Image (cartoon, rainbow over all chains, first blue to last red; front, side, top):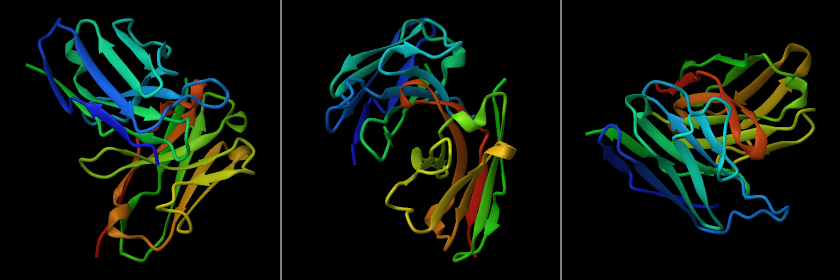
Length: 112
Length: 118
């Protein structure tokens, strides 16, 4: 199975400051069809996960533009340009290139 | 508005069985792949199973193959997960999720908690 490794596992951030989460896969996520099936999800406390980004950098409907995704191959990044209080939660990367789909361990974003 | 509502969770003894349900609305259920993802208490997310829009193809993670069965009833816009020979390690919140663009899970239900304990 593809192992997804996120860093850091915990990210204390000051309100209004940027945050960045890294996700590294144990093998390339480029599919034979040319697409890279890497997505990012947010899970607020007590809530189900919510899709933020799909295919590396595409924001899902309704996701604020302070969230952005980048990367290629095995290295990917989620950035929050200015953290707001509602961004507190655990963030997961997920790959759906190689079956079975796998998730990173999660990064806990909290306010300092 | 897309809605996914799971039900059927509860406390079950080891070795028992459960059938989870997910009622879908707000989209064309019969045109979408669907999945189950679980989350053990205080832990991360684990993909469990997926089913093609017509129910003909089903995929399972190795750790559950043979004990779990995913199915759907497109006439009822419902997704199911039958879990047999339950073990303590199956204790988790089970989420129903809809596939979206780029093989992402674009909508999730609130989840249903399965607790396996004697």
